Length: 238
Image 1 (tube, one colour):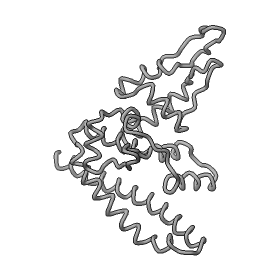
Image 2 (cartoon, rainbow, N blue to C red):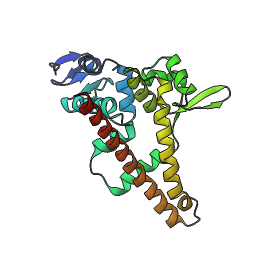
Image 3 (cartoon, rainbow, N blue to C red):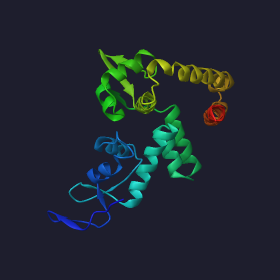
Image 4 (cartoon, rainbow, N blue to C red):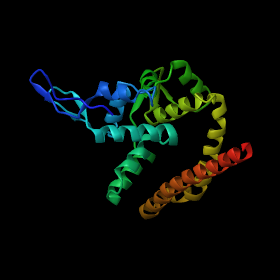
């Protein structure tokens, strides 16, 4: 990874070993061809990276900042993890109350809504790709005053779908993922729905904690089962 030597911009001095956002973007393009300045800014907006700023507002990235960014991009590309999960993984051990608060936002918090143009920009997909994902129920939206609005979490879904498309898995093939997710959600719902509907605050809290735990274990089991089947593919081909 190259570094920036000390130089001056106006009355400000750029410290050695700090990279501008443009330099970071170009240095990562070989491994991440779809990387863009806007995507890096989006990750900063989501609180996943925190480059320092000069007095003039320029972003400067240390080596640690770049390493964290690379980790985030690899987790997105290789593990298909949503950003909120990546944030929890990178934060490491934190206070139980804060961890609970973050998870609650993921399941019950009100998400910011964006329009289709912003979703396409953040996910680096074309409008026709978004329409295909909508047609097959992969990306969902609501309509208000004739405009389609999307939760921010739909960006993560669109990004994962776009990566799969590079391997020839297009929107119509994603029904398999939708069916599997729907069945898992239905099973979990049967287990926790009575508690979530309870008038007892303690019981509702316990049911919600069970829901969070079940979601994490179900995701882990799904990944392990997939990896086991894929190892079988490799063995049969050997």
